[in-house]
Length: 415
Image (cartoon, rainbow, N blue to C red; front, side):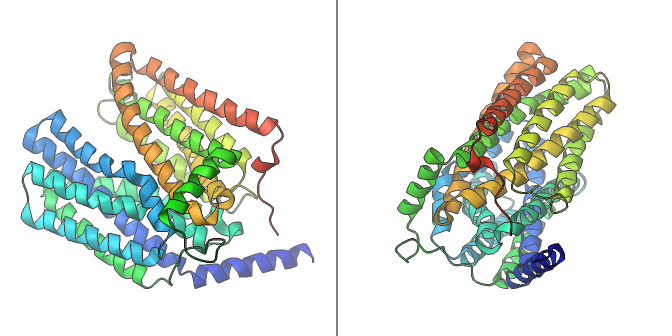
């Protein structure tokens, strides 16, 4: 078959899955719920600070949000055994009810934490389900493109939601953002209802996957598959290193570089721009989506970016290095997710996503605490150096795995 004919067939297949899975509806539902959720989280954080001016009170909100996420393994196992459309609708409706109650009642601090905890339980169950949609509905050759789109949705939703939540809490009433979040979940559930059914993948016995079987299958994959193990280890490790740097960005921008309030925002904006640039390349460069080489390049770019941020003599260099770090993070996220979806057992994809989520949340929490201690003890530049050294070590591990000649780490073949 001629090259042009192969390309025509590939375009036809891509168009077919796009229509049959109604993927644009799924993308729109995720954009709405992610943006609304970030807006509510930002508004609640500002509101609690305004009401209490207490660091521990804000930490209580963080704990309420993180605790349910530690059960990601079980949430992923649930998604492996059920229809994903139905599960996502149930979670969206539950979140709609919780945030509507929060906006309507304007509860006390403790009651607010209880409602946030309930909403995060629903979000914990929904997260691996949403990440499993790509693995179940998108053909392998198009998963990189789909993951790139979802990465863009997350980045845009994070930025837009943070801005809306901050404005609502600062200029009007935090409950405006919370009420809008409730509406976003209602619209999301409506859009998901128009998706076709997404049933569980049948086991070798021809039946659905039980929770215990999903957990066993996911843990077995981590133990025996070098791709799954490497991607999981590096993703969690880089999340930990990035969390160490988070407090250092504020200190470096505001104190060392004397950016007078704007430096921290510009640095975060640079990370977002870099991540969006990575998503824009998906589908335009061959094998970008599912290549372990590209995954490793993403790791190295982050290490270089974070090291340069720590060495930055002026704000412009800090922002440029943040763009590089964000670009590397985008490559790592897209190619890593696609590698997991392509290499993992179909009956345990949700469980693997849950393990990754739980590990990342734990790494985020521990890294943030350690980063604060390091900044106080050694200063922001040494904190960046420590995080970059960890990133470099994980990058070398990935390079060593590739140089060993493992065919498992090659990009999957395309026809």
